[in-house]
Length: 342
Image 1 (cartoon, rainbow, N blue to C red):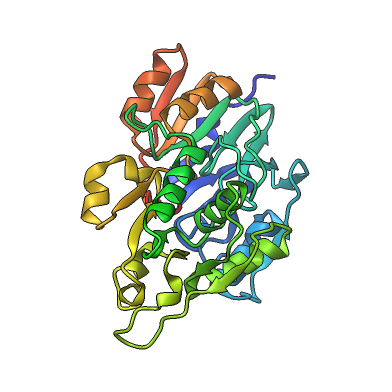
Image 2 (image 1 turned 60 degrees about the vertical axis):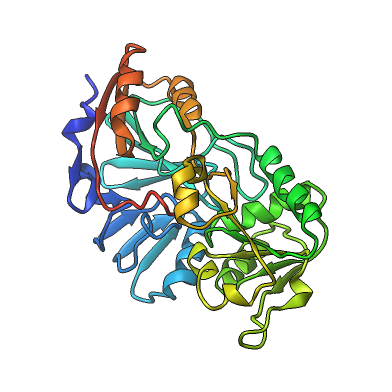
């Protein structure tokens, strides 16, 4: 019996990627009846679904962000454990993006499709590494799907940061980092580089750092970066490192830091104009997404004859993949935020 073509049982709807024989969505862009969620970033994990299947870590992240949602049916899946939903078998495999992130393997009558969600290929002590899964169709993101996006070594970027801290002992270094994934990874990279002093956190980062710790991720000495008296900089932050959401750095809270060196940790810091527009003095090119070379290497690793691209810089990646003899198509899905966790 010939396996059905994936396009005959998986379709793109305004609500996202819909799996017809299981009557569920993967990472739907709005509330639906049943959802399988790859990870906890808000553009992939929405509130209001009637039923959700995801890793235990992702469910915990959703609870922190959205509350308990007592009417919602939740199913925690272990990596590698199969779940049957209708006529589809669902198995999760690590994606290496953030804590609990997973790729979704969908199997239906001999046809295998892997939906990557967001992923990276770099070593990250705060989450399980990406695991290539052979399949017939690989459904990938392309946030950094242009040849210009080749991320430098994370350790070199951290060394650049620590060198700046040594050069400017009377200034505070405040790093814009997204609350889920990037903040915890920056902390872990600093610890690996030997920074054993306290790291100060904006209040918006505390809950998710606590959640990472509850799941066994050691982040060391973290302290609240509480704002000082209005109009008076906190001199005790001189020579220290503070993490905050990017949006907080420009508001009144940020103005109470002592002559801050504004940093931003993101793959988008490769684009100088973006750094300039945000008033970033020290851009740190550290990303939780695969860069151009890693996207192409991942396509080679999974060895799927066909690749679908959900969102991002689709055209260049389609061209590069078809040049290898594989089929590729852009799904041009909307509703996913390229800034979130980049």
